[in-house]
Length: 342
Ligand code: PMP
Image 1 (cartoon, rainbow, N blue to C red):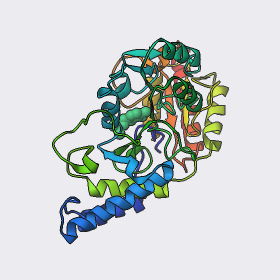
Image 2 (image 1 turned 135 degrees about the horizontal axis):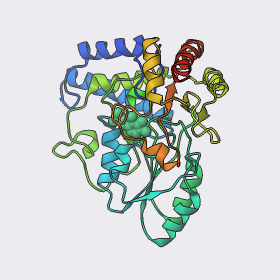
Image 3 (image 1 turned 45 degrees about the vertical axis):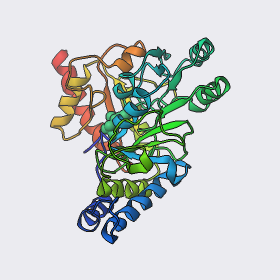
Image 4 (image 1 turned 180 degrees about the vertical axis):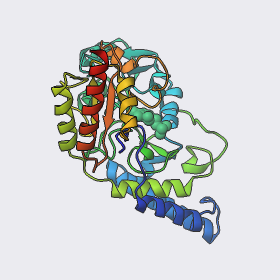
């Protein structure tokens, strides 16, 4: 059973069949002038409208990219202002940060630190909507108010938010990715009325001259269908699993903050990699942190920024993932680890 939706989510049948239909019928270049090309362009436009609608923006504010990493690199790498990013951002944001905003022990950004920095001079602020490792939700509306008062642009990486939370996030630029909400990997978008000051991918006039490169029409169609069919998440099953973890002495990372309803990051007495390996043998697929950092021996920069030591276990559920199989397996794994250590 799969408990790693924050790494990537499985594609529902409706998405897979829309993609294979687009591969069969909309394989032509959407920039071609003939009917076949125009049919592909119409399919792309339909997906653009669905994405725009969900995010409460205009279709022309959506620029399709190869994913969130590209969208982040575009806004932040091509910024004419220094970049101020939260210390718990995804590496594809932190890579471009000139200065970092500290977070508290729950992983929530320090609004006073942002306000102080805004007074000191122009800066582009980047704060994620929700963290991929802990699920901690940032007070984006408050950050936006501070930025607006100072005339500073705000970028928000909403990769883990869209598809999990019903309401739209407002920022000057938003980053989204299809594969966290049941769409294909390698597709995403940068949302914004204005493009960043410079193109990232030059050498083509696609996307209204904002991004060069032939559009991935089947992938974009899949993105649209995934958004259209994304379901409401409830925290009921996550909360049951969390209750069990607490009963076994686990500390919940970010437990004092608002969190995504599907994410649970728990620190057990035993190293998270041992628990995850034990769960794997039981057929429960969880992870120790982000897929980008797990597998490497490094500690998580997210927990580090929160002043927390240790390797956690991250469970990230889908809209219909039941908690019970993970609870049963976890019970056996923890019992085994405890008797081995006794
Ligand atoms: N930002 C966040 C918060 C993420 O969780 C991820 C994916 N792990 C990314 C950016 C990168 O997304 P993509 O795989 O679409 O490049």
